Image 1 (tube, rainbow, N blue to C red):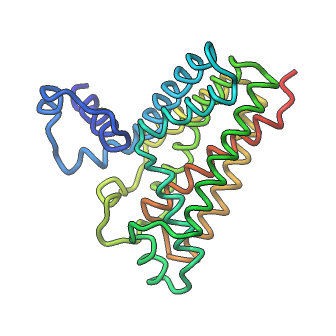
Image 2: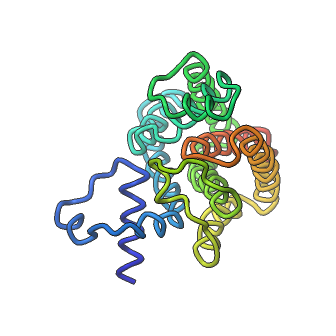
Length: 258
């Protein structure tokens, strides 16, 4: 049990900017296999990030207009994650849009600078996310909006992390290399549960529709990643998470809840 808590705290430290108290950090320590074991908690960390965003949105909703509250909630999640996944989206769009050979794509993806394609992708993603969340809140009320926020953050990370179960990490080294080991068995089932159960909380029919959309998106992304670079990188997982989160908001905004 103590080891699992260490793995969870490792995931919290790796996937967010949440600082651990010095004593707790010393107790956790570090072993190479911690990062691999932490992958199973990626979706759970997503639920916590979503809950923090939902709390910030709800608090802001008490004082300001819904559009302002949604932006503040989004800002809270960006601060918590350090725009970790948005950075992956920008890097991937730059790389896939500007590179032709596999080597060129990986080189551009590794470059820390953001190009025009990446900047445009982030702007569109954030604007679309903002407008979809405002639309959900206006049509269904703040309660549904908050649950959708939490569920989308968990389910989108679940979809992204499943690439560890089926695809190959293509870099010999990289920030995601220690995490990018095959995910299977109880770890994979736990990640799936963290993604599916919050969707079911909204409604079984909605969960079914969202899962079908995520499965189609995953198949399309997986085929594209393999065709272009032979597998995935950490940036590819960030791109997958962002597109999956947006897909859930698109389904929720179009869903007839009555």
